[in-house]
Structure formats: structure tokens, C-alpha cells
Amino acid sequence: MKESKVTLQNEEGLHARAAALFVRKANQFASEITILRNGEEVNGKSIIGIMSLGVFSGQEIVLRADGADEDEAVEGLVAFVKEEL
Image (cartoon, rainbow, N blue to C red; front, side):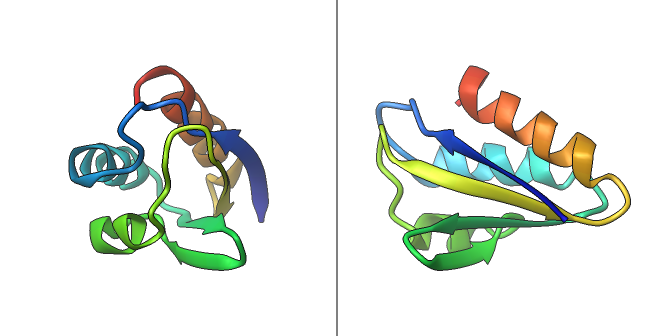
């Protein structure tokens, strides 16, 4: 298992479109992806789960991956959040 903290910079937070883009990226990895915020954790491959976290711009989340490609998954998703969301 590998995890990393990242601060969301998207002005609109993890709304429906951003959540859908994140899920599309997360599904490129075989590992289980989990997003954690304030003690709550959701499946990082679920749009509804991600939206239920209510993450706004400037808030920190933890991205966790567990599986064969966990290193690549965390690195890829952190870069995606920082550069593309």
C-alpha cells in the first residue's frame, strides 16, 4: 500500500466533471484506489463516492493505492490532481 497527500487546486473542487475525470484516470490502474479526507474514505473509482466527500479548492486529500501498480498509481494520480484538475 502506498499513499500521498495532495492539495486540490481546482477552483470548483471535486465536482461531477472533475470526479469523472479522476475516475477515468484511476481506472487506468489495476490497484484499488481510495481517497481519504477528514477520516472518511471512499472508493477512488466511484464518481458518487468522490462527490460525497465534498472536497473544495485548497483542501488536502490523501490518495491511497493498494495493488500491483500502487507506486505508479499514486504518482500518476497525484500528478493528475496537481496538473490537470
